Amino acid sequence: MTSSNESVILKLAASVLGIDAAKAAIDKLDLAPALDSAGAAIVSRASFAMALNIVLFDDLLARVPTGAAYVADVTAGGGKVFFDHGALRTIRFADGATGALPAGEEAFARILKPLGYTVANVYPLPRLNMTGRAYCHQDAPESIPQFFVSELHVERFGPEFERVARRVFGSSRDPLGVAAHAALARFAEMECAAFDLAVAALPEIVAAFGCHHDTPALADYEALLARSAEAAWIATEGNAFNHATDRVPDVETLSDAQRALGRLVKDAVEVSTNGRVRQTAFRADQVERLFVDGDGATVARRVPGSFYEFITRDVDPATGKLDLGFDSSNAQGIFAMTKAA
Image (tube, rainbow, N blue to C red):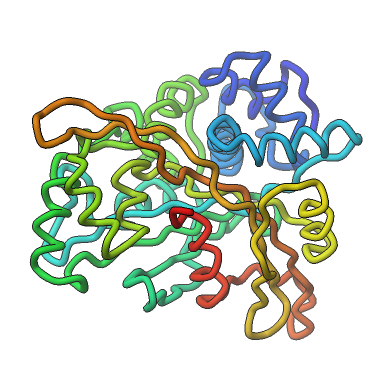
């Protein structure tokens, strides 16, 4: 893909990142030229979805030094990253919204569906009391990154856990404003939007992939952590990308090479039941987050942040196309990357 000033995707990404950072972000990625909108005045849903993914990938690298170091190695060697999918976690209460946010994955279905994504499959994650959904883009399923959106079912942990979760997540705010709603309505109706509307909407939609509840009490965080590392992670990181994933030819060889460099890679590669999807990941980088202690003072603690993942996808012989599926067992194994060391 060109990184010239005529690129609509570049212009969209630059409206959030600035032109130099947008060019740098795009230069890291292997992007299909066909994803760029044909004209400067109208933005296709595919172009907008790709621009959104570029900004979110850039944010992930800013928060995950290990992933940034790996990507720097790739680009220094003249390579590019193929962004396969990003993953995020949500909270679902049994009886309604999460504060001002729609319940669980619905907070992102309202964004992804107008942008051309459909739910390709649903993945039960019973060991975690969660459910995952893979959102795949209709226009270019192999080229535009998927979203793996999981939701944690609070009611499955019992009433005391739910009381704590409501204290933590009940203050959630909705970042989507007038511009985002207008653009999403336009994309849903016409599969495109005016460039100016798309530019106004993108920062609001990017903001949805963040943390929207108040600073948690340390005691509440610890209560969540005692039952669910995933709930505790959402308490500090919110709906930010939990991980971004690089599609690579041979995840086993890559894993060995990264381990030889001294990087903390998952001990074993996760292999799907059908054998066609293989995944591994770096362990989550630690981040410093703030909490409120029992005296009302703000205290800092180091907790697991996000991480960088790798995936190898083989062709499905039944279809002759790349297997874009996921696997419940793989996902649950990968989720362990954000457990505290």
